[in-house]
Length: 313
Length: 278
Image (tube, rainbow over all chains, first blue to last red; front, side, top):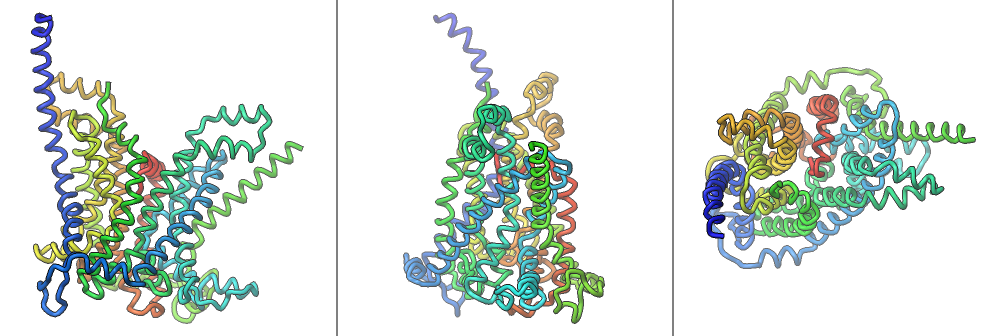
């Protein structure tokens, strides 16, 4: 026993010093990233909470006083906040839902074997690669009342809606915003789902075919259940993005006509109205809303993170 | 019967492919169409411009606000890409390969940062930058984008580093290389595809960044492209110089489309590697 322990000791000591060296190297290699995150993300979040607990003088810059939760009371008591919350949630649910359906359809098509599949994948990336600001401009040109594509087509076909000022009316404006978002991000959804489809073993389908399962049956009992993880990740990603949406309504409508989202009203208070206290409270409330989903996300990709960071052998 | 069935299936497939192509490309075509019209043509909705002209394009390149915006975006997005690859590769390597405590926690925190709503840090960053003189400067724009781009870089690179056989590194160590030398000379070159993938995604992300671009700049000589385009749109909702703004939008989109066409495979791989968003 004694002898064995003595024999082991030098080896273990050597290993330990290797570990210590690795730790030092590891700390040095992580330091720059963690410093950036601390300076530009962690500290500002804490500072935002502090700002939201104070009231700031508009007349004398730098003058402020602690007001506790007053800004939150004001925010939560205002109809503007709840309208923005409703707009944001409605936008998120409808656009992410449509993106899932359209994205799944696109993924199923792209999964089939045909010539030019790679080209189609590149085409599908085009809306994803276009700047969100440009997406908004694009859809403004499409919904433009006079020269816009939508109104022209509707009126020349004699369909109703040809005289609607899409971006100028409540309801229609949100619908236009949802359409623009679906256009831009359904392809992203499609690519995530396509990766999921490619992970489903082909022989499952062959076996089902032998058993006489039809196309719809194969889709329902093989494709959908096995695609659930990919669908979940895609939904979480898109939900996180949709809840934070800012660029699209900012350029499309400037938040007019029922398109003001949580990020937009916080930005308006902060920048346009120079109301740092209330604006920060709104920003923190947006943060809390998003963090709920973010928590789900981390739990869901936890397995991936663990696989990446756990020690081998 | 089955042959006819198959032919029908084939036809439906091509119909679906055509629908996807039109869905994805038509809106962008409409933008190009608008950018080629001037004057009275702008208030007509022809599918093809009746008198196509490049006037809008020549006029935006004469506009210094636009050319400055292109330069600003190139500097900011380029710096964000280089910096996040540099420091992100260190962090990715440490997390994928070194024996360290709390690795799970560190990566989880990093990833959750990427889900922050930018608006939540815009106000404090604005205040801090004003105080320390970073407001309306390139570093002031680069740092926040870096914070959001880093988690993505670290995650993608870590998963690429992990796939490189350990034996190659160990051979270098036996030959007397230090751990860091092995990282620089063996791991990085082998992970080059991952570096390209991460670089592309971060560049596209940084080029697209909007909220900080409008909140942290005040003059055209620092304003990046997305903010400049939003500024073009004028103060009221419906008075916009549609022709020129469409031309500007086309110009800033072309480089991204070219990138996507060339690196399609890499980008898709990056987007789906553990499904980290771009």
